[in-house]
Image (cartoon, rainbow, N blue to C red; front, side, top):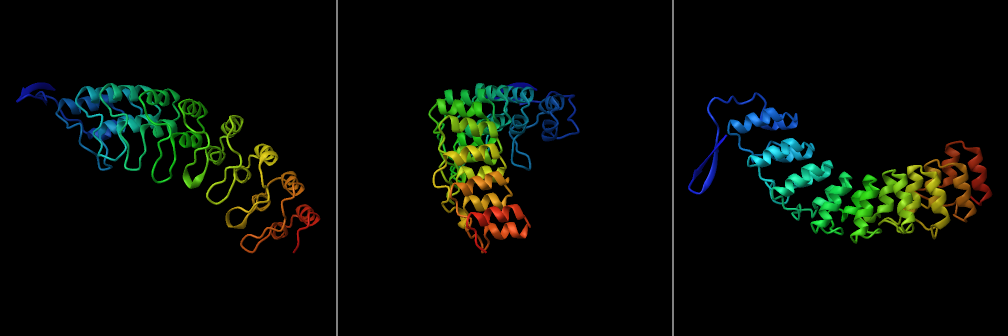
Length: 312
């Protein structure tokens, strides 16, 4: 490629003699074949065209965490903000890929760190989901809002970090003002999201940091029920001791005892709930815990439920 100034514009023309590669530019980028990418540039490829998926070559390289290709494309005219307005950007892709080198290179070449998608998602959401705390800290230092919410699920970056099990990112976000009990999808807290993702250490760290164990989602389901479903029985025992209103109804008439029986929790968990006074006569879809135990021919559980007052 040789630059020629025309009317104040710097236009790049291919040098004669260069052969266009067999693979398309997008195929070369997908394969992380930098030599083929360079050959495309030398034969005059337009670097800001989009593929059938609607993304530029730079976006794809950033999403691959391919820093050498990202650097080369940027140095040869690729726009760091070439994605259509309202869509994810190369910066988002690099942040989600967890590549600090890619993110740094994009910012160096003018990437708009505060651009959001139509859904309100920021690059900080992507970084938190990607789990690279250095990127999270860099974007926070650039002024991104740790409490920014997506429109569809209302999730903040901290929600995404909790869903992905990235404790160091959670710490960085809370240090910059993110609220530990902010809720996201269906009113679920970071604690609930970490339990759903089976990130056991993160769940325990959140509790130790003061997360509200009694914060229910829109269906009234608390972290305890999600811990039962996830099969994290050590956490279940911890939560039984500190959860308020254990017998309160939840989604579709379930209480935690029904959930424990339905998901075949260990007998000692079920017995502890019974000892705490949780009713064994909860009906959900015309079915009680005793009926579940009877269908499963679980004589030990049947006896425990009847002893606690369960009726046919």
